[in-house]
Image (cartoon, rainbow, N blue to C red):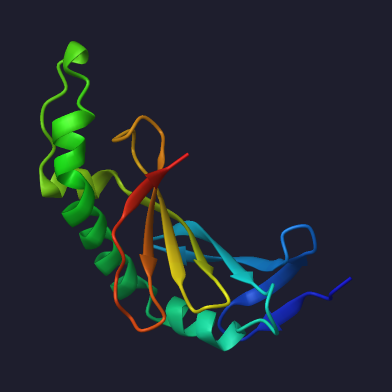
Length: 143
């Protein structure tokens, strides 16, 4: 069993042996955000995750913008519930429905931002990945 780690930025991170990751929690916009740090392939990169958390507000904004850029047209073209009179989403209304649920760091340096979708895609999660080099991958829906 691996002992919990108390990190100066991340707070208490506890190890889950079934998932091979450390987990903790932070806040963004006054709401809780789960943190995960995968350590399948070597020692956990606590300081790399701490750098993400330290810049979380800006990175969250960037992830939301990526989700809007990649998924707004999909929502309006294929996921409208016209039987209920649902109208097209704007970039602003789409973004306002996103709620950051978790941030995870993989061993390869990819950071995954997972958002609750505010029922945009009928309860599917919205995932946005940021590569280790800082570039953003295309947002996707999951679940």
